[in-house]
Length: 163
Image (cartoon, rainbow, N blue to C red):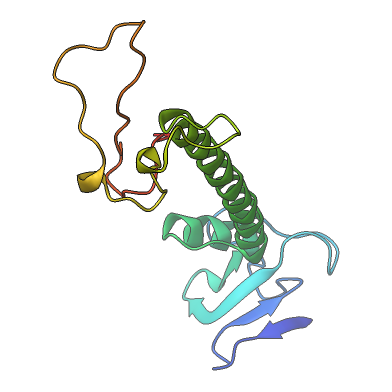
């Protein structure tokens, strides 16, 4: 038998070919192909009377480990790559939201690229929601336009929430 790997304890061995009888996976019955091609066999050092050596192929072990919540190195690498891409997308969306917040804040404060109508109307980005102007008591009509924009998600840092 060609030993491919050995666990640190020596109790678990991985072979390219299952040579001891019956020479197949105890779960799916895979008997293997040429040495080094296809699945490998995990030998846990257990022999059953009237059966022989109990081997598990790497596909069945992967299925069992997935069922238990573990993944292969390939699955982990794929998830890490997807996670990094999603993290990058979150940064892009946060930057977009911040730009939209600045635009809305500037519009709310009367700034259209040339500054606010007056300094008392400037609403800095760090103004807590409790210190922002309160809305008018009467409904806003299309002619009046917005008079107050509130912090939607309660973090006091944004005007628009991309919920």
